[in-house]
Image (cartoon, rainbow, N blue to C red; front, side, top):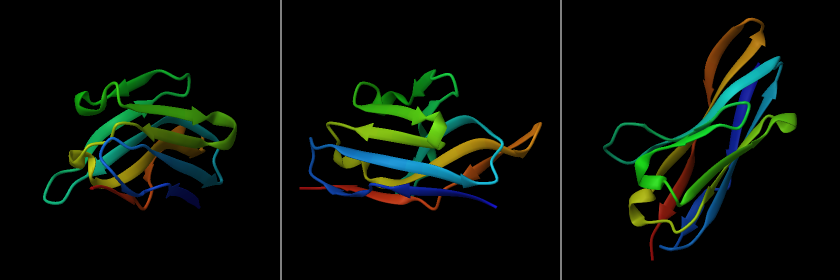
Length: 120
């Protein structure tokens, strides 16, 4: 049984900061890519940022220069530091991890989502 548990969402004012965390737990043998996605009302889920096990990152254009993804491999945890947030960042943020419970097979797992609302 694998669980991804997100935390850190909430209400923040435009220009403010927020830090999301996502911890993977259970019978995990190995974790590859970890990432954050978001889904705004009436829109499709979209990639926000992704990080490989070795620390290579990739960001969606709307968040480049404002958001930073990082991870702690020892804790199977990924973080998203959100700075200078904008109203258009309002969405449910989901964590995703490509991991294996039985090597060499990997599959993607999702967290339950955490709401981020940017409003004055």
